Image (cartoon, rainbow, N blue to C red; front, side, top):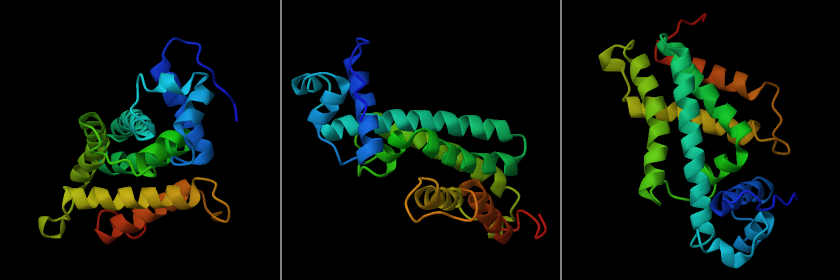
Length: 205
């Protein structure tokens, strides 16, 4: 394990960075607050100047992760416009890209048991990324006849669930989880099947 050390004058962020490293290596419940302090190069007592305990520290990791995630989702959605289909598919790919690039944040957000309602700030950050996917679903669902149109929240939740499943099973390098296709191809095929079922893309697309 690499000791990062506290040199830059921002103890709070140094502790977050240390926690993210430990989460990547040991999981969100696999380290103690003392280990986070040691990795940051400070005494355990120093941690309590900024965090009430490990759960509070992990919640801050999740908060920062949701902020990054929402920014990536916003960028993906905007880059796919004006096509509603392209924008929708781009948000799914952004999910995979985030999980790969920010594994510590991802685990703090979705695997630590931290409630998105732990703090008002965390709830707001989580809602922003969900809102991007729901906006993409609303735009795409306008092409479905009203009587066949699922609620946008359900539409977006289905794609969120597919994305999360692909990440968890095939995009995390878990032993025994090798797939004959890339996570991106698996997600694209899954979304394609889903959209064909809704009549949004043709059978030969």
